[in-house]
Length: 548
Ligand SMILES: Cc1cc2nc3c(=O)[nH]c(=O)nc-3n(C[C@H](O)[C@H](O)[C@H](O)COP(=O)(O)OP(=O)(O)OC[C@H]3O[C@@H](n4cnc5c(N)ncnc54)[C@H](O)[C@@H]3O)c2cc1C
Image 1 (cartoon, helix red, strand yellow):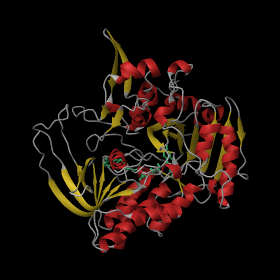
Image 2: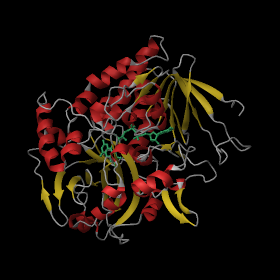
Image 3: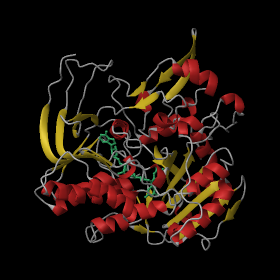
Image 4: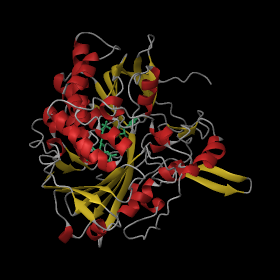
């Protein structure tokens, strides 16, 4: 194929992804120097369209970035008033008292927010400072300089032919070059994955770990709505089949976020995370809350869970990994937005100093140091053993041991050192023959819904004539390997019903309905043969979350 000719635009800093990490970096750069040229590229049709984490936000990141956020009208309207934690059985529940929990688990001082709306507000702040933000622009390739440094990205390729070639209607996009490129793509970013592999940034680190998080927004009976209440549960329905749990957050306007996270290191390939979520809503405590209400939105996204010991090296020549591109979620708190914001601020400060010193295209080591030795490192380090303890010893033991370890870490030491995570999540999957299939009740259409109906509430959309963005390294593996060995778990782990095994006259056939994809990235993580690569489809495609 002939070399593609593209226009190039020069910036000081090019930022990929308008989540809390990328937007914080953009804001901080312009706060430090209004003359810096900063661009943010976002694959969603608008800022916030792909943001899922409706969320209890620890405002420490925002406090550091925009101390007068209240006066500036940030949409943090619902302070947490009540914090509940339950262990569920099939019909009952046991309340875990707050008192023995380490202080870091306390949600008082935090806010229940729509992170989509917080990002929309942050984008306004950034634009007022002069940041250029381009939504609907997917960054599909990295551009490397002569010395092997990351020099920029290719964004805005539209209208590829179905086979991926360039046709008469193809817009080749443009190159955006920067003295530094910030990758703030969130969990399992596709360009971040390339950078981590190319520069071997995970060398000597534990494998990254993940969960898949699914969420619905419900409008409920006002008599049952308790604005500011946060509830977390563990136990039923997952039991010993997988780690994970639920969250129920009462926000404004009689709305409730109901979400469920399943850790992706589960062994039984018959497990069906989406159906676990649907089943969870039939627990008497949840069913009673939702009865008479209606589900108004649905979405899903993977969440990073590896924490401190899995964070790769954060910098390579010309490039830095921000927020969940590097995995900065504090797992027991289920919070990563504050660290995403702090990382954006830290990366911006390092880039500002470097640019002032006439540097470009090198490693921003000051950023790495700030993350590891500053507030992010301290937040993640304290909880580093919770996830490995859970994976190794199960829920109850991890509650006790993890709780004790968080307490001692709060006091400045750990009796356990730093525990490892073991295998990555794909390799944790065991053969189907070793496990019993799980019988899931049929959704009732009132409290629980079939997957495709729910996906229509993610308002996801993909131009059908483009190439499938879910690439199989070997197209034969689903039928020849994954089906006989693992009962092809893609049929179940995908929370959007993208993958199907259909029976033809010639036998089973693997079908990829990429149009349904909600960009959660679970397939890229959990496929036991590691045969699926999530690449970015053209800009503007994907979910259109309202106020998730
Ligand atoms: C179900 C669930 C519940 C959660 N609950 C909470 C909570 O209550 N509190 C909390 O603090 N955290 C929570 N988190 C974690 C939180 O979502 C993350 O820590 C946070 O989103 C990380 O921010 P980020 O800016 O790094 O990435 P993201 O918020 O994921 O933003 C990345 C952005 O980059 C864009 N992008 C990605 N790739 C490209 C590309 N190649 N080109 C252009 N654009 C691109 C995406 O569309 C997206 O807009 C939750 C996560 C999940 C999944």
